[in-house]
Image 1 (tube, rainbow, N blue to C red):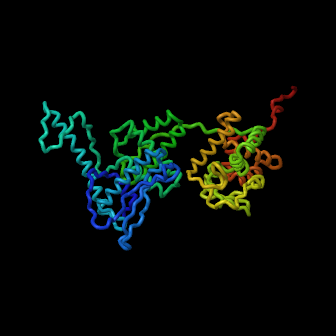
Image 2 (image 1 turned 90 degrees about the horizontal axis):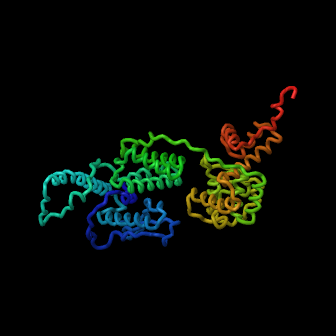
Length: 464
C-alpha cells in the first residue's frame, strides 16, 4: 500500500486545478502548514484530517515532513511545505484515501508524468520544421499562441522512467534511512541539497537524474575543493556516491561513475598536546569563567571519551551506584565506561533531573536540547574557541580534542614509571577503549607519548 509520504513527495506535478468533486460531508480537511511560530529549531510539517469510514469522524493523519526540516531558512521551508500542501490537496481531490489501497491512483499519476515527458520531447520536431519557413504562420483563432522559436529552450529527450533529480535523491534517502543512523541521513540530505542547488545554478537545463554526467560531478567536487579542503572533497564524494549506488541498484541510473573518481590525499589533523603548565592555567581560568565548558573538558580529560560521545550523554545513561556511564561510541553501538573518582566528585546533583534530558546543554546541566549530535559537538567546539582559544591566543593546532591527547600522554608516562611498555599499554588500553594493541600503539606514536632518554653517550667514541 502506498503511504502518504510517498504520494506527497511524488514528482508528478498536475498542472490543472481540480474543481469541487465532494458532495455532502467533506471527506477531509484542508491541509495546513505548521511552522512552530517560525521557530527553526523545531520541526515544521503539513497536517490534515480524513474522515474514518468506520467511525464517520475526521481523524488527524500522519504529519508530512519530507525534507523541509533540512532547510535552515524559513523561506526555503515554506516553499517546500507549500508545495507539499498543494500536492496533497490535489491528491485528496483526485481520490487519495489513507484508509484504502491507493495503488491505482499512484499508477494513474505516474502515467500522467510519462505522458508529460513524452509531450515535451515531441516539441523539438515541429519547431525545427517551423524554423525552416521564411515567415511564421499566424496562429488560428482557436489555437494557443506560441512564443517565437528563440524563446523556447530545446527540450532533451529523456527516458520516460527517469526521475527528477530531487525525487531521485528523496527515493535514495528513504531507502538509506533504513540502513544508517539519523546523523548520517542528515549529512546525506544536506550534501544532496547542496549539490542540487549548485546544479540548478550552473546547469539549469539538467533536470533528470539520468542527465547528470561524470563531468558535472567532477566540476562540483572541484568547487568544494577550491572553497574548503581535500577532506571535504572526499566526504562529499563518498556521500554522493552512496546515494548514486542506491539509484544504480534500483535501476534509476545505469552507472555510479562517482566510484571511479579518485579520492584526494589529505593531511591528517594534528591536535597538539598542552604542556602541564598551560593545561593547569586553562583549568584555573575555566573554573571561574564557564562551569559547563569546564566539566565538558573534564569528561574529555578524565574519562577520555570523544566530544561527540559526551554530547550524546543523557541523565539515564549515568549510573551513580556503579559510577559508570553508557554511550554510543565511534566503534561500537553501546559502550560502558567507568567514571573515575576525580571526575565523579565534580558531577552536579543529577538525581532530580529528567532521565531523558541531556547532561550537557548550552545553558545548564540536565536540560532538553533539540539538535543533532554534530551540531551539539560544534557548539562546544566553537565555545572552546571563544572562551579559551581566543583568550589564550592558542595556535590553530590546539583544539578541544587536544585534552584527550594530553591526558593519555600523562597516563601512559605515569604507568611507565613502574611498568614495562607492554604492561603500561595493556592497562592503558582498558582505560582508553582502543580495541587492539596495534591501534593503541599507533595512537601513542602519533602523539609522541614515549620519548627516549638522553642518548648523548651513544655519540661518544673511545678516547674522547
